[in-house]
Every structure is written in C-alpha cells, then in structure tokens.
Amino acid sequence: MCGHPCTEQCHAPYACPEKTPCSSKIAVTCSCGRLRQERRCNAAKAVTSKGQVQSPQRHPELTPLTCDDECTRLERNRSLAGALGIDINQTTTLQTITAENLPYSEETLNQYVQLACSVPLSTLQTYESNLHALAAADKSTRSFRFQPAKSTLRAFAHSLAADWGFVTESHDPEPHRHVFVLKPVVWMPPLFGMGSGSTIGIGGMSVRECVKLRERERSKEQEARRAAALEAKATREAAKAQASTGDGGWAQVASKSKGGSGASSRTGTPVPNSWVSKSIYAALDGDGAKKERLVLRSGVGVGKSLRAKTPAPEVVDDWEEAEEKEEKQETGEQSQHQGQEISVREDLEGKPELAPGAEAPADDHPTQAEASVTDDVPI
Image (cartoon, rainbow, N blue to C red; front, side, top):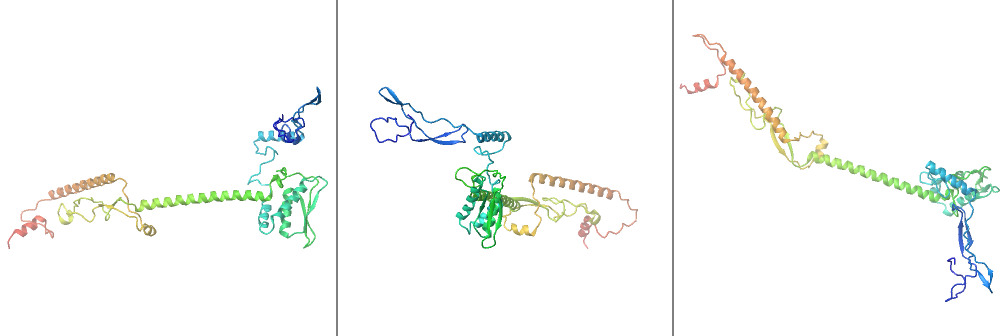
C-alpha cells in the first residue's frame, strides 16, 4: 500500500495483510524545504470483522509542515539577493565562502599552521568546538574558561574568539595563565552563520578546512605565475634565436663597397686627368671599383661578433633594385666624364696660333704622340 517493506514474519506465499500500521520512518518538510521532520508512515488497510469496520484505512502521513517566521525571512532574503545580484547560499541566504572571503582572519590561519606542527590536531579542534558551543548556547551561558596553556595556544584562542565576536582576557600568572572568553549581551552571529548539523566553525567551516582552501588557491596562483614566466622565457629565447639566425644565417647576399668610391663594380670608368697628363683618358681606377660578392655564413662565432659589437654589413633586400641603382650611377658618371672630355677639346682647339719664328713654350711633360715620334727618329 505504501511501498515500504513489511516488518512482520514471513507469510509467503500469501500477500502482506497490511493490517498493522507501517512503522517505517518518512521525512516530512515544509513548503520551502527548510523545516524537516521524521514521522511514522502508519499506513494500514481497513480491518473488518463480521461486516463491521474495526479500524479504518490509514494513508501515509504526508501532510506537510507549516513554514514559520524564519522561512519567511529567508525567502525575503533570497528575493533581495536575486534582485541585487548577490551570490549567497540558497539554503542559509548567507554569503558564499571563497578563498578571497574566508570567515577567519589571516592571523588565525597563520597561527593554526604554526601550531599544527607542534600541537595535536585534537587540541586545536577542542578549542574550536568550545567556542562553537558558546556561540550556540542560550543567553544563560555567556562565558567560557580555557585550560592553562602556553603563550602560542593562548594567542590562538584570542584570535579565534575575536573571529566569533567574543571578548577575551588572560587571567592568572604563569604557569596557570589561561584565557577567559565572554559573550557580549548584545551578540550578533558572524556574517557566515554558524553552519548546520554536526559541523563546527563559522559558516560550517573549520579553521583547518579554510587553511586547505587557502593553500589550494595559493598553489593555483603559483602555477599560473610559473606558467607565465616560462612562456615569457620561451618568447625571449625565440626572439633571440630569430635575431641570431638573421645575423648569421646561410645564403645571405651582401653588397659591400671596397674603399669609398662610387665606381662601377664590373667595369672601370675612364677618369679624366687632362691637367696633369694632357691626355683625355686616364687609366682605369681599379682600387675604387665596387665589387659584389656572395657571402655564406655558417653562424659559427656569432656570439663573439655580438660581444665585439661590430656593425653588421649592409644586406641588400632586393638584388635587382641594387643592380638598377648601380647602373644609373654608372651612367651618370659616364655622362659627367663625357662632358669633361668635350670641355678639354674646346680648350685645346681655342688656343692662339704662334707667330712665325716664335718658339713654343717648353713642356716638361710631352704628349704621347711626341714621345712616339722621338722614339722613331734614329740618333
């Protein structure tokens, strides 16, 4: 009838008579689910005898509980939190505990970590449970006195009691010095509440659980910083390797000038020197010629070159553009030399003729034609 297993002795192969009220426990809650109560099912079939109903049929006790004032307050808080966009615990309407918003102070957590190395954890849990019991007690119980302890444990008791909102004092000299905790007359519970069920601590979290949560968050932050540092290092090494490859890689074509003149790299350009040699054409200037060469670098010794800080040779980005530029420069120089040649010829043709019997001025540097005639005349 109710679906619960039968608790009577075995009556197979006959069906369960279900005349005895079911003794199984069922949970009954209020409409919002905050209130919860266990009841007996008490479901049973009607018992009739000689046509008369001895006991009527009973249905399971599923009548819900009635919400109280606290249920109304929590429902109002949930509505306000939803309107304001605040993250709360829907069951307690309290603020959610996170690593950035712990119910205990940093001083309490640090003292717990230090004491955990020298004091049994059961002692620290006793301190927490005593303060939790004082917070949950009624108004008739307003104080608690710890056992005499060392200064480190007393400091932990002071800090932990301050997190609960209690007032503490140290009484008696050493070695009987202890901590006295007083609950104020007007005492408000912590913002995170007192937890529910058998859990102890503010918001249902003990100091140990908060320490673990903080350590996990710190480990995540350290891993994130380490990953960022490794990524930055890899980026720097990649940039350095790229710079080294660009400075000493294979098959780089460089155009390097030899000397400082702007002469052609393939052919010599006639350089006029008429005022000295009385000749239109001079010897080719091979020292000032520009040469192109293919430079193959293996990258060996790049570190030494970087330490020496020697300027890298100019690298031609476009070989065809460099060739065109040099041809234009060569054409300009040839035009300039042709202009100088024409001016020299005009000067030679425009000299006045000598009178008969007049001697020509002596010339310390005979021309090439005169030198050839002199060589042909026999002595």
